[in-house]
Image (cartoon, rainbow, N blue to C red; front, side):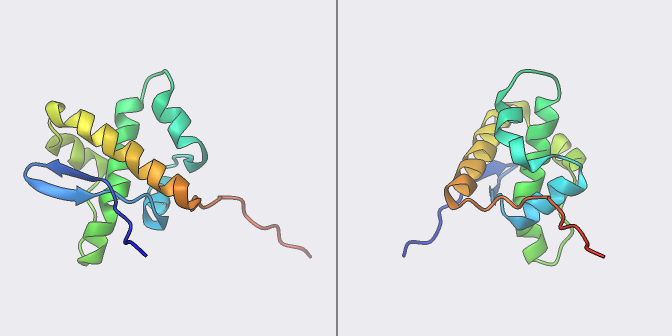
Length: 117
């Protein structure tokens, strides 16, 4: 079985592998982003798409920092590091990470079980 090939984006000379796994979904949930309709939000019309793409990038790159025992950078940090000319690659990488995840059907639902008394 071939190892999964995750999308990669180079920012400021560093290569970041983007994974939309459980950690990314957790980070986004903490930001109050509904992960069930991300592709629709990213590809739809309206304000806030730039922020959402940067939020997604931060969440999808978080695993690399967590694996090294480092805190993962915030979206605000990434907004200071990503250059306008790199933003298209960031968007493409985020969409590719979502697509890679959709192939594995690994989106975690946020439905909470009810407690019976």
